[in-house]
Length: 223
Ligand code: A2P
Image 1 (cartoon, rainbow, N blue to C red):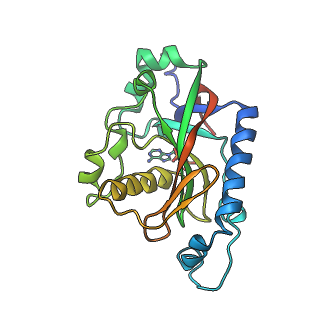
Image 2: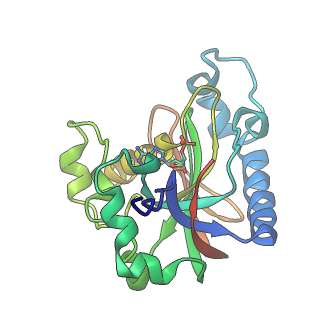
């Protein structure tokens, strides 16, 4: 009999250690709590609720079933392009179960997703697949994404609105970064954590004054 091929996971990524996950969840929930009380946010509330006067409880609005992580390669058990090649990379095999520190430099909130932008180090970029930034990006957004530095899509999904898939977080982040680059930032509000900017259509971006670091383990994930 042929030896069984090792199975490919749903995805690879850096997973926050449990105590780090709690810390980040608390800090980011506090931010959401403050955000939905801000006048600037309330002015654009209809972009979340579809109605001008309705309030929104952002902590309830965003749900997240998976452990907090930053995806490097989505393999879908081998169905995605390059999944096997990625799993076989020496750097991937050597990194498995190794700990690493991630640096979160910004938070994003849109009517679809809540996420944390991750600034990858040069070493971490070795685990970031070539072309990962533009995978599944709409053709109209592609030129702007290609103009961003590699690794711009790196993020941790903190939550999704009902019926929205996690893959949307990276796409929302790229859209925001592209708008920023075009100088399309609107209202800016100073908050304890940093500067909040509005980028039309319910998109908010908080640049953290100090990056939030989190200890992680590089690992694969299957359900
Ligand atoms: P993200 O990395 O933005 O959080 P799901 O639960 O939908 O199967 O997704 C599992 C994980 O893989 C999530 O972390 C998700 O998004 C990521 N993911 C899902 N689909 C893709 C995709 N097409 N490209 C990149 N990452 C994906």
